[in-house]
Image (cartoon, rainbow, N blue to C red; front, side):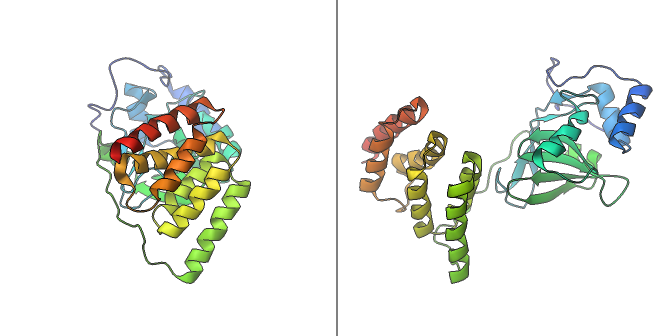
Length: 272
């Protein structure tokens, strides 16, 4: 397996140091799986590390991007941080199957070795909040070979796409539900999906996020509004409304929201 360019020169926080056969046997017994030989051989060279090649291509859109997933690091043979963290991460995030071994985590998104269907595991991407699962590679070696250091995200022009009446009703219901019950991160992920629907749904959710009590939700909304202020509005939000919301957020008690709003106001005035 070629590993050139996978990691930097210096050891980092994910490095677990050297291990012996006894350590592998103990961990495999605790996890109740057999680690792939390709994984073990890689960890013998460096046992856990930040990746320099951080992207894996996929043709399935997800909460990270339209054509890739992000993989920041690989867990080594050990714990805190290491593959033994799988045990508490599965419990914390409601991942029920004990045949999923987490090898990288950016909760609620995880890269796992999947032993559910066979002894030799595939590599899968799981987004717990979106209830999405994508098979990335048939095995660990294929996964490592497929990692790249850069990938351009494909832009999808999905504004004002055709939706059935039932789909529109379902989206409105989803917006209302996540606004009432969701955490800021969940609201942001639903908003990302709504941005690929139509202008009426987008405007509806923008107003709902505007009225939300948590500054974090306002900050997520500003990520979109700042693009509008910089001239990427595409007719979605009227300038007068945009100005009204930014003026309102500029009075926020939250410093991040206030500063971001003031920046966006300056950009809006430049683009006029």
